[in-house]
Amino acid sequence: MTSRAPRLPNGLPDAKTLLDDVNQALLKALDDDPRASAAELARQVGMSAPAVRERLTRLEEAGVIRGYRVDIDPAAIGLPIAAWVRVRPGPGQLPKVAELAGRTPEVSECHRISGDDCFLMKVHVPAIEALEDVLDRFLLYGQTVSSFVVATPVAPRTPGSSVS
Image (cartoon, rainbow, N blue to C red; front, side):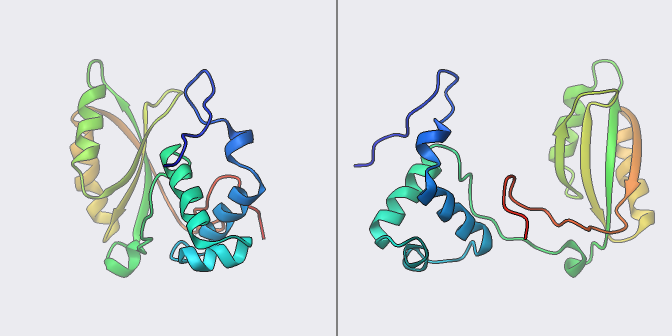
């Protein structure tokens, strides 16, 4: 039976206890190769595979590891145009914007933000003209401002990961 990671008063895991050198090395190894087996991770950190699996379970239970995902290139599946869209909902429209974002397949990310706008969404479409349809759906509930992604000099990465 695994013991639960120590928690702070705010309910978050105690990072000093949970993120010791071994767990940090495990997270780095997983960041480098999310498909690495427990045996491979164990070799990298100098532990047994069962010990590594137990540590990974604790990191998952503590919410440090939220899940394992596949990274699909949108352009490779016919969605080469990416845009960031800021939305400023009209009065009383905030929940409707969030709900619409959740059911709009072109929206790959939606964040509630501070500032003049309330939402920041990443949208993927097959052509620039297709963005018009997506924006029109959101214009029913507020104002939008769009910025097209022209290059990605820093690919998405794990926060705090070392820069190589």
